[in-house]
Length: 381
Image 1 (cartoon, rainbow, N blue to C red):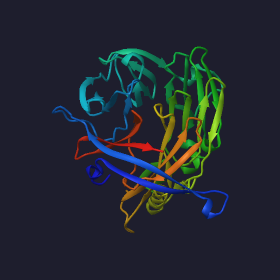
Image 2 (cartoon, rainbow, N blue to C red):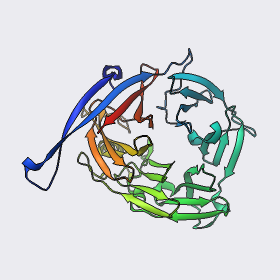
Image 3 (cartoon, helix red, strand yellow):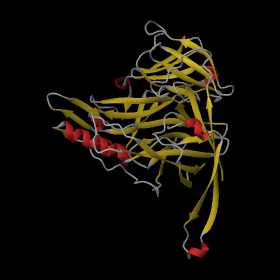
Image 4 (tube, helix red, strand yellow):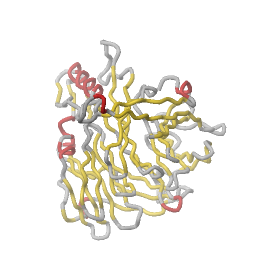
């Protein structure tokens, strides 16, 4: 984001013409007011880990604290979002009975504990960095819709309600196979669900091995347990899904954006030349990217950011050319996931990084001259 402090306490009104079936005179004009401010976290003379854009972070169950993992020091930064200050740092061990390694997501758990999803299972630690509970999730130990030898469980999240279920994705290498899975941890059963968007993931996998260069790229997927079920999808399409565990059904949410294409059209393959791989990557980056919807319990609605990158120069360097910036948009959905409104966010000029909802506002991480900050948005419909 360019000069984020320039939007401090920035308030603006946007006027939208809502389409109708009648004549232009019958169209209704409605006002949408977005209030934006920027806040900075007081690090208490400490250095906070910002290199990964808070990619390995999660909220406490009450949403007061943000837990951000420092990979270099192997410790957890506990940020008080009410007071906007570093509360403390929690060291973790790498080896031994309380060891933590190879994790890819974290979030707050019940009674102040912290949940980690690792490549070898899932673990819950207390506030002192001691292991409280763990689940070994070797697919070979489950029956039902069993995984093949070339498939793995990815991004497993355990339901904190105590119902003994976990959710994730089953993927083969290069995303040639991908499906949503529900794990019954008590009965050791796997149930899998195939969906159109997940079936397309392999089409975007790209690789290069020309004897001098090796590169690999695949699309990002997302999955998160929310109050109403499990949200999941992928960045390459506007369509996403909500699994209802009570009814054992999946709701498909399809909403074609007025701003961007509903699907990224750049298709990957095994490339023979570095220039071809670089060209594919740029086309992929310039296409639409849809992020995880986040739930706003206070206002009973979902926020979803989506964006497309742009390049300003014809000369691109490297196998993964970095864009000059991004056009960013917001979609609002009601509690039943019906689209309320879409809006362009011109004050955001780069890919949105870690973001979440707290106190009825959308918080987006921003690096303020190597200090942790957040742009906060609230909307008055």
